[in-house]
Image (tube, rainbow, N blue to C red; front, side):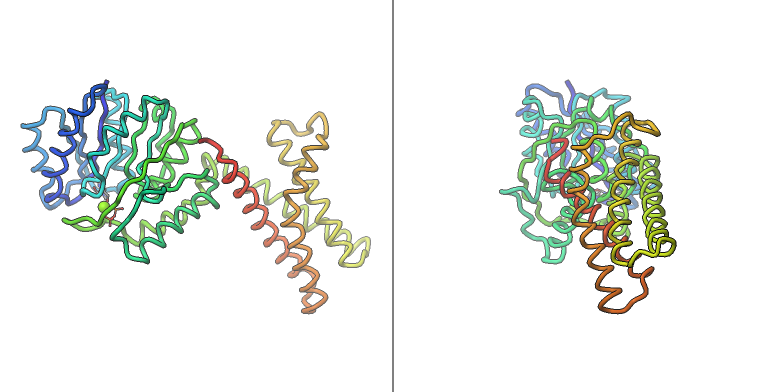
Length: 368
Ligand SMILES: Nc1nc2c(ncn2[C@@H]2O[C@H](COP(=O)(O)OP(=O)(O)OP(=O)(O)O)[C@@H](O)[C@H]2O)c(=O)[nH]1
Ligand SMILES: [Mg+2]
């Protein structure tokens, strides 16, 4: 069986002659797999590719592909596709080439897959892991990013969702659709994790120490961080179609909610606090029916599931209460007109409902 380590490189001329022998030297500790290394170099101007070509004379299991620079995510997609087609590995390892990932852990990564784990993550933030040289700012950014991914993105309790040191079973990767994943580093790693979990990954994290790089410079840019943030909501949805459906249902719910309020307050001339209260309840019912239709794939579900509705009602309660309180205080205390107050209430309710659902998913630990 083959374990293929994919090493993306961009300007790693000082590191590549150290990391490649260090990886191959782990081969003696691994009896189950033959180790191959695939360097994916994006035409590094510093001559990394030439050094790899030189090393290939010495290591027959060292491979190289190169091309224009399109980001770390694209490099990984290219590398995974190439490895699958040419080497038919049983395991694929992701690893940085800048010596921040300790090659001595490779045997442990591989070993753990024989215990039924299809995804082993080297985790900087699991107990025992560390980032000793991170500045306070970078540490906070990483922790906050991981928290956002889990909470807003709805990923289960994994300590390090953006780690670039992982071992993945090839059969799990084959089930995944990598084509729509982000191109840049941080968001690629988190979207790939999400896709792996969706396809039933059995995950284990091992703590790693992630020191500063000694040679070369970081490729982590502001754009990387921006793409990471913009990508978080997308992570919740399998693909853009699912995202569009979610938005469409949300939009229908919003229109229904507003129309009901206008009808009750303007046509039936209910006092505003009654019209708001009733429209909130009607909208919870309407949203429930929409979600049921979506889940069951029918326009009119056969029966109304009372228990499920009560659960849905309970989950919608925090959003509904906030909506109502904002509406009441804006209209009766701050003397705003009712429509802007109602809209402010609706949007607060949407954000709270979204967070409640994310939090439930996160706590439930789906996928692990
Ligand atoms: N092929 C390719 N490799 C890249 C690209 N960007 C980064 N890399 C490689 O990906 C690995 C991780 O990149 P780094 O810049 O070290 O990112 P990081 O480890 O999160 O950040 P630092 O801690 O600051 O080093 C390194 O081996 C880089 O050479 C890219 O666009 N193309
Ligand atoms: Mg690095």
